[in-house]
Image 1 (tube, rainbow, N blue to C red):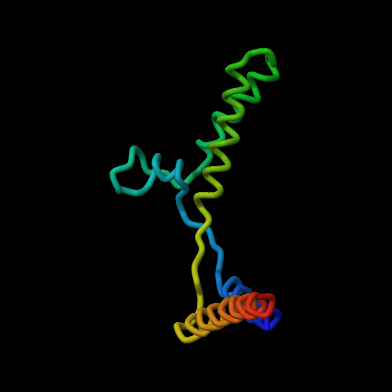
Image 2: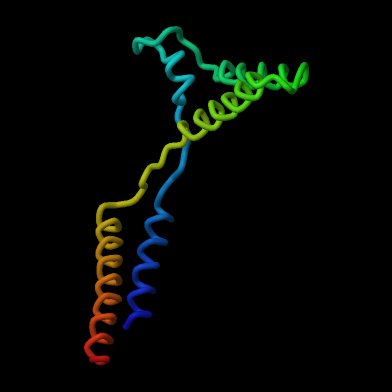
Length: 127
């Protein structure tokens, strides 16, 4: 019983993740604040090159004098800004029909219920 429940739940999870489409958006968290095309932003830009400036300045400063703490802080801040910018552009879209989505939910719920029931029946037999 438990194995059947695991297979049903895993099948539902696989079908769910198989139906998700990953794409990227136009503006990230940081470059979207700078530009944005008339949505109350500072300036309009389609480039995200401005987010490389702190990283570039930090690396430049490290090659000049690697003992400067502020250069290390600027470099790490630049890396953090780049990571935030890349991750904020990722968009997840569920691309499936409603009937398939409902079937996934039923399959997952039934699989979990069967696993739970197998635990309950095993506990009753051990008493």
